Length: 178
Image 1 (cartoon, rainbow, N blue to C red):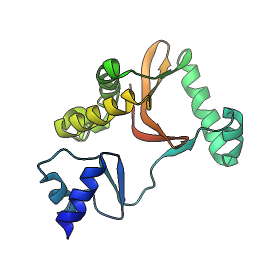
Image 2 (tube, one colour):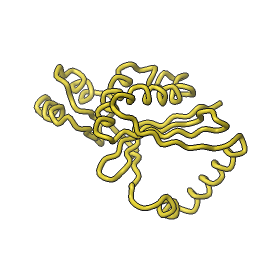
Image 3 (cartoon, rainbow, N blue to C red):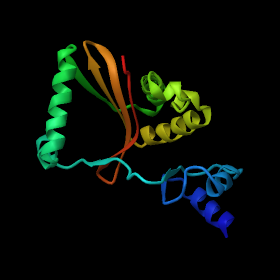
Image 4 (cartoon, rainbow, N blue to C red):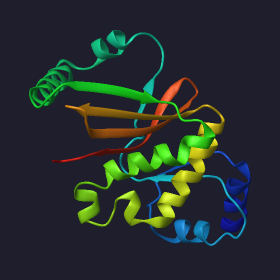
């Protein structure tokens, strides 16, 4: 039964969120053991997937945040601004440029604690290949988004996401602790 379920998931060729199962274990091992090309299965144990609605202006979203969160955001932006001019860029890569855009993000994500603990994307070639495949497919469909924050012209943080169902679905976040 498990093999039939996994084959059905694989045949969807769409991202699939599998909630309530550990990211490691029997289900993941069985899925990794499939020979045929498969859809993307994202495993989440305790946290919800980060997503934002894409409706309305930024101010509407900002104002919907709890007061404490707005205060934290103002404080962090002020602190970053004290280090240099803050700029933000939204990148919408095309299929031909998707891998290069993702690799630029991967280098940001690889610059801190994730590299030291061996959990960055660049430390895990299978995850890098996986994300490059789904990112290229998303770019082909016009859905891949990369966001970059720069301080004084230097890249400080990035976010890789996919647009689907009028929401921005976060895949990975990374920052340079320097």
